[in-house]
Length: 414
Image (cartoon, rainbow, N blue to C red; front, side, top):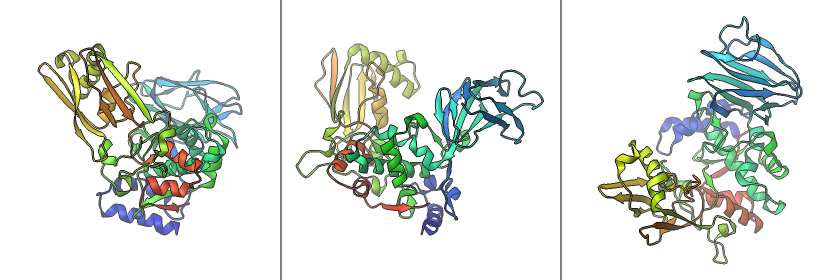
C-alpha cells in the first residue's frame, strides 16, 4: 500500500500545481520504492562566522567532496571551524595538504553524539563554507530521530492525559517534514532547525512522552488526493481556525479551511490556552519608532521618508473574521499591509510580533492605540491548545487530526 501511495504522489505532482502539489513532490523520490525512512538534512546553524564541535567519544573528519579522511577529533576536544579565504579552516595544520576544503563531514562512531556550539545532536554533521565568510552546520539523521527533538519543542511538555495531542503533533510535524524534503536545496539542506520551518533542539530537547508519541506514530503522515498535505499548525486559534490563504500568502487547500473550535458546552476548546485572549498597545512614540521602522523596511524606504504616522485602522476582514488588511495613516501617507505583515509591523516594545490577526482596535487617542485580540499564531491548520483540550476530553489523535485537517487520510508510508 505504501509503495502505491508514494508513486501516486509523484504522478499527482506531475498533473499540475493547483493545490501546491509540485511544492510537496520536490524530493519525494527519496521515499520511493522500496519505501523507507528518509534521511533529513537539517540546518542547525546557518551562515555564522564559526562553529565549535566536539564529542565525548571522539569524531572522524573527512573532506565531504572527495571522501578523503583528514583525521580524528579526540574525545572531549573542542574544534573551532571557521573560514580561510574560499574554504574552511581549523586550528593547526590539520588541513595541510588537503587543498581548499569547502565542506567537512564529521562522523560519529556507534551510538555517540556530536555537540555543535553546546547542543548535542544524533546522527552526523556536515559543515559548509558559504558566502560572505560564513559557515553552515547541517545535522544529517533519520526522520524519526529528528522528530524526537522537534515534537517536545513544538507542543511543549505534556501530561499522560494529553498524549493524543502529542501524537497528533508528531504526525503533523512528520507530514510537514516529508512535504519539505529538499525545501532549501540551494542552501544544502531540507529544513531549518528554527521557526523558519520547525524548531529542533537535538537530544537535550527530548522528552519521554513525545518520544513515545513519535514511536507510536512512526511513518504516519496525512495525505489528501494521494499527496502529503501542507500540515500547518499554530498555538491557539481563539475559537475558529483560518483558511490558509486568509492569513498567509499560500494557495488555498480544502483541508486548510476555516474550522470551528467550539466545544459541546459552548466554550472554545482552546480557551485553556494562556494566549486565548490578549491585548497590546502602542504610544504615538512607538508608532513613530519601531512600527514606522518596520513599515519602512517593508516598503523599501528610509523611515524619515514616510513622515509621521498618526494611527492605523482595519480596512478589510477575512471570511473567518480575521483582519485581512490594515492602513497606517498620517499627513500625506497611507500604507496598507496584509496578512502576516500586520503581525510583524505591530510588534510590541520588546520586539515580539502581534499575537494574531484576529483582533479589534479600541478607539485610539492622540497618545495611545490599543487592540484586543484572540488566539496566538497564524491560525491555519491544527490548533495545538485545542488539540490538548480535546485529548483531555478523550479524543484520539486521529479524531483530532480529522477535525483540524478535514478530508485528509492518515497513511503509514514507511
